[in-house]
Image 1 (cartoon, one colour):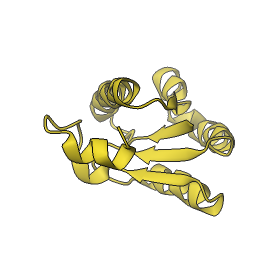
Image 2 (cartoon, one colour; image 1 turned 180 degrees about the vertical axis):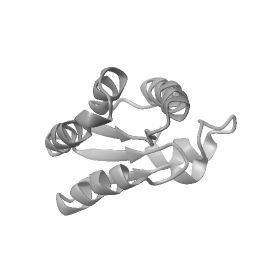
Image 3 (cartoon, helix red, strand yellow; image 1 turned 90 degrees about the vertical axis):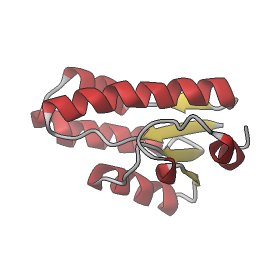
Image 4 (spheres, one colour; image 1 turned 45 degrees about the vertical axis):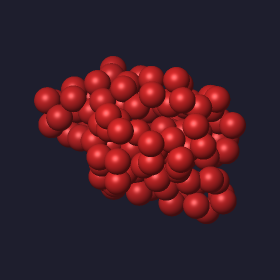
Length: 119
């Protein structure tokens, strides 16, 4: 299963840096605990481009999401960009793994998360 990983990004530079570190933790956790192919196309855009490229990045991300089987929401809150991604996923009847209630980082007791993702 190819799963699109959605996480908050943020516009403030420090928040963005922390979010990029955190999404990598989620990525590693998912790699270790699922057999999913994890897709995080927005990461390279956010890591290398500024806000002036946001429209293009979002367009490309949504095109890639359209090829996935599921979306996984992480990072503790649903942002506007994530809501757009979720909306497309729901329109396409993709499976939704909502891990937002787990909080910002992968919790130490990940039992509930493992149940949700089938790990």
